[in-house]
Image (cartoon, rainbow, N blue to C red; front, top):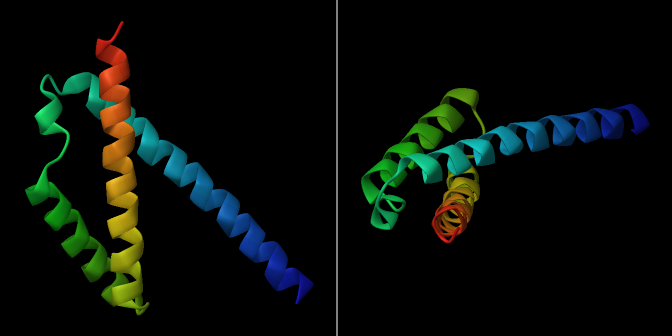
Length: 91
């Protein structure tokens, strides 16, 4: 059991590193987008969710759970990007 927990801890660390990269992309997007309204893109959100459902299905992991996690991730990313967009333009 301890080896399994160690592996889980390593995976969690890897996931955090990947999330860091994802949030760096959100920050870059905030710099690129000239209009605040461009931050929320419902078409792109739907595309990302469809991709995740496909990836989850191909990986044989629970699609509804992954879709729910990504829904929260996307909304959190949008909030983060809006915050960064505002910060960049308040200077």
